[in-house]
Length: 302
Image (cartoon, rainbow, N blue to C red; front, side, top):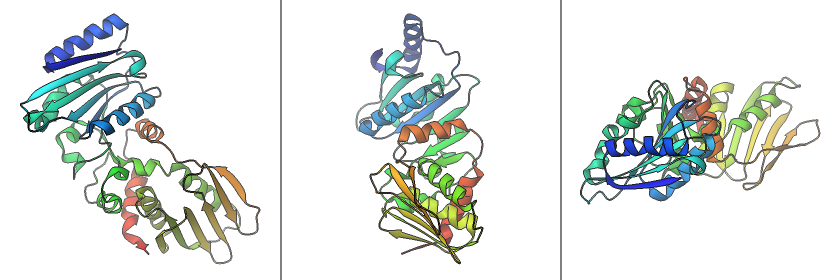
């Protein structure tokens, strides 16, 4: 069910949300968190809503979507409520802020926060320079950004360290979860030689590969090189090597280890829904993400 409420107020939206919930039989019992989605692009906001709806099947929540409308128009709030099949396992409140109202996201969102539940803020496209100091970020215990959608992906992911506050994370980090798992497992098998260098290659504008290189630099404390080219991670040891290669648009990767047969492993690119669901599973500080950000300063770009 989708209900449009043009030219309204937060009080009216709140009343309508109760009416819609009662009419449709939806309840807030079991909602485990409030997810605030802050987007400046209506087209990208719709994709973010789809991702949040899918993630909500694992994490039932209230999704509050803030979209900046026409900044030159008079201040006006246009709202939309989605429940049932149009909202996954959540209830979605879309708030379009026009005119000067766009400068007061914090005040607009507060009436819709679920009581006694954690708050997570997600910027699917353009994020504030310091998420924790943003008015929305101050409300949240977890703040999710996505360097993949920034104009300069490498500069953006490198800049995450200077703005880092406990509770911050980036979806480029969760996009490499399976890569990290496969590489760690390969290193845990014989021969148990120390890694002397590593190379991460792929698209130059892929921040997930940048932070993967940072993670390797931080964990292995060896020279790590970031190059443009085929999608591949190679770990060099004194007498052997490990490599993990996948076509850019493929779903299967090849794991090669010196002296052992090649292995084909499932390794498709993770979509936004999967990454968001993973980040919503933990609401505590991700120390390894912070460590990987520190490791970025040790990576050599070629």
